[in-house]
Image (cartoon, rainbow, N blue to C red; front, side, top):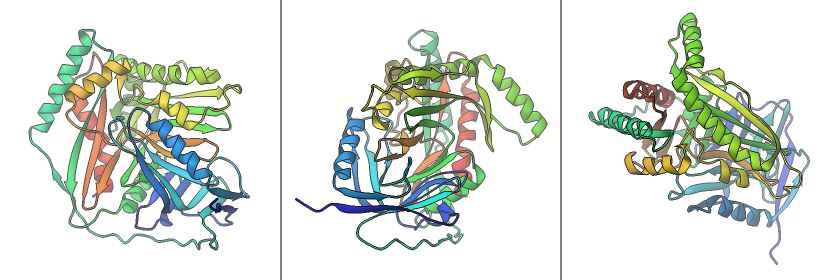
Length: 406
């Protein structure tokens, strides 16, 4: 029988600038307002695909855990060995799972390090990136805006004909740089500009999402639903008026209600109780405002084997990134969207050895491939949607990545 691999977790005394610890090679990050987790080095990695990808991911993770001898003096969610996960939107595309060699975490006044192997504790040191000019040349088809608006028009017609209630349409842009694109630089800029979002980097997918799909910790589950968006002007008084108009918009409230209901319905079978607020609040980000609702629940004690994988399988794809009814919306996306989303709009984040985890929806993001990057934006389409307004909304959603790459 092979010997077990040591995994050690211990406290780190000082406050850590997490994103400055990342090396340039394959950085892993899940950070919000300076807190979270970063990782580097690869102990093991794999990809999963197909309709059973969440179950297959669980099976692979559990097999890896069976080979570890864990010594954890910190305890709590996010400590010990971790799985960084980036799942595809569609089961047909590959999802990526990575177990880092070294993980550093910080929450409140607690900082810790986990490393795999019978080696001394790794030395932590900041590695600030040097600002290098590496401009992106965007490949923009002059007809792409008109084509996308036509897809919106067709979707609205299908909705008005009663085929479905809502569909989320995405679009993408590709760009090329002179030298390899540095994920660390992007994630640091996004974290600085959008501190209330979850900044992430997993296997070349880098972004800052405002939407928390799932937090599972000690039998408590939380999901933040965002649907309904309006751009900010930078004028505080004007933006307050826009926030009020967003909160009264029947089109946006309808879109939001579909998204909230899909999440609440997915969580309900696992929970003894759920809390779904009667009305959303307006979440203010640097460039846009969203209607937001935090759905929470307490897992039923009798459901002993429910973990993050179990819930993700039911939650994804929610109406916020797919539509309502789910099957009808997915059919329409496959029919008219005209692209593969890859890991855009899929769950991204981490899962620990207990099956707890924190995963967002991979939004406001891009997929790096050496010198090139592909960025994405999506909009929820309902009966009252306007193609021109949806185009403007998609452009606003591209701003974070465009600016981080500038």
